Image (tube, rainbow, N blue to C red; front, side, top):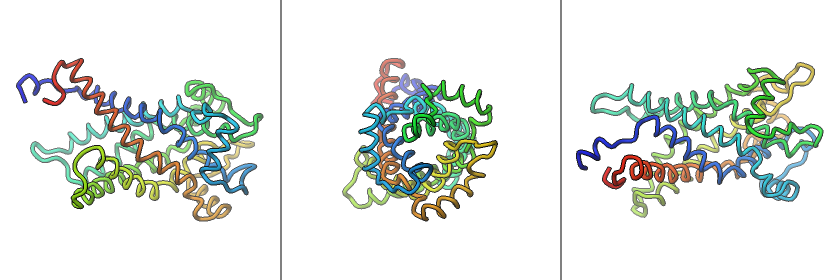
Length: 309
């Protein structure tokens, strides 16, 4: 590496911006799966409480009744979530990583997992308002016309929630959202690195996108299984309405108890297929977009060859 290339580095604030932008780019592709997952998790509530549908049946119904554009309901909230959650998580993780690194020794695996959980928790707190808007906007199409909230965008949703329900309503479900982020980050860190090591040891894989994709899908499976019960609690709390001053649920444990009682134990994994199909590809797409953004910054802003850095 030349002396000029050593000095040509991407500043941290740009890394955070590019990380959030990469997540937003990936969301453009996986938003329909997010919508489908949310609809599946809410399918045990209200008028359709006794109607059991598969993900494919739900997908067909949404396409038939709302069209392809209906699959992208809540896209602005999904993009806002990535802009807030991903950027904050990256920023906090990078700051903590530098604080807990020695001069020549980076943090160990368990420390990295702890830092990842902490960063995920902080990112989830900052991203909860966008998450609340996302859940409600993706859920609207399943409701009768007179019960729909009809938010026109994430900004309209945030303004109306604040005006109609109070500022704190933007952080409804923050605790299970933060809990989910901690579970997801811990599961992803542990399972991804382990899956990558096992695949490399088979001799059939080498460093590259194919290895990254397969390790991500294995990691995604483990992460989905471990995090979905917390996710369904978060989804239902954030979508619930207050009737006569009384919330439908008292908290995450109340949601889980009622789901098991009314819909059965395995209802805690409703929306498993779209959730799993989303989490692996979203990680891979985020990685691809991030690499392209990094290369473009080196080439057009720093005026150096990305391959030489």
